[in-house]
Amino acid sequence: MVGPTTLSVVEILEAKKNLGGIVYYTPLTRSKRLSEMSGAEVRLKWENLQKNGSFKLRGDANFLLLRVSTKTLDSRRAVLE
Image 1 (cartoon, rainbow, N blue to C red):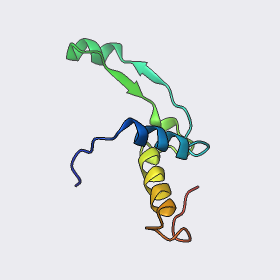
Image 2: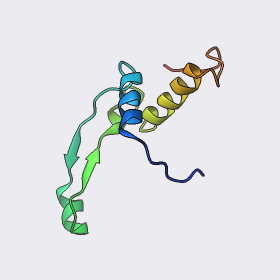
Image 3: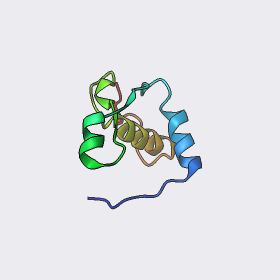
Image 4: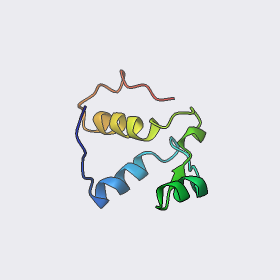
């Protein structure tokens, strides 16, 4: 397992641009029950509403797009639906 990574604002904005048309907006909602139970503000991001039903789509798609654009992955082997 890879440890935590700190991303710059530039990297975050680049990922957002790269994922346009691949990843769709999903809502962020407050969980009243979890917030009350934890004593902290808890919000849930509904990534299961992505077209493919996967919460891993953002990271996986951005990883593949970066590897293809930097030529560290053959684009004929990178598959995204």
